[in-house]
Length: 287
Image (cartoon, rainbow, N blue to C red; front, side, top):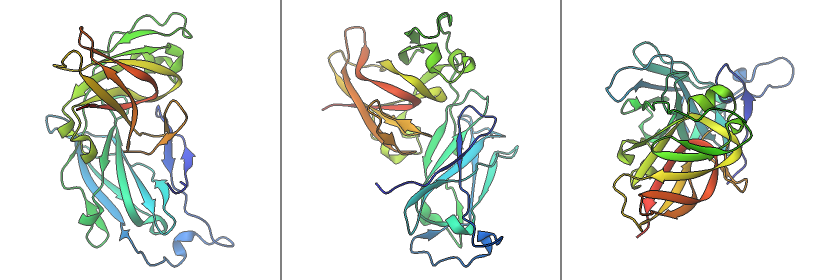
């Protein structure tokens, strides 16, 4: 994969958000005044859409972030995320210097709302005269917080039962105490994902909060109606700064295999690998 160009800025949110900073020309001239090169891919100047929940109710104040491969260099740039309006609509304005896109992914995060972070593929082919309007509303899913064991010694790992997943994790591995207290997980139908690569999977687990772990966590999944003895592959969805246990980076909105497991007599799938990031886990039955 070609190299990525990323600039990090921090908001009052649990995660760092990536922003693009247009390069400056000589002197004090802003780069937006410089001529824009011809685009051999798709020129996107605005992205419009709407964010809703499972009941098709609008979600206000969600942060909608566009990450795109910018041509001709193929650098990955993630734009500053605007907030959705009370009716759930959003408008992303794209600077001309980063508007020539060959691929793009959308990230939707609802601060403090108990919703899992959603990643969506972006179909650049629907762009018309520089305006890209998402064909359907982006759906976010609520994940209730589980009852977690007392924090106690934050350096000691313990089993945290989130229903869909049992995490063996130390509270101190989470970014802060609030993240440990608000841990949750939920299975949903993979067909509801707005990432086509997930549709062929047999199950999808959403986590709250989305977080990078300071120490890897072991995972055991409760796969609905799983047959004892069945083997499943487990894949993690790349989020902001996702790394595998061996340090390999996973790009936003892309899946990477993390391990396999066999369903035991209790219907539990113990995965032979650990994870370093909480985003989404997709499971596929081995044939």
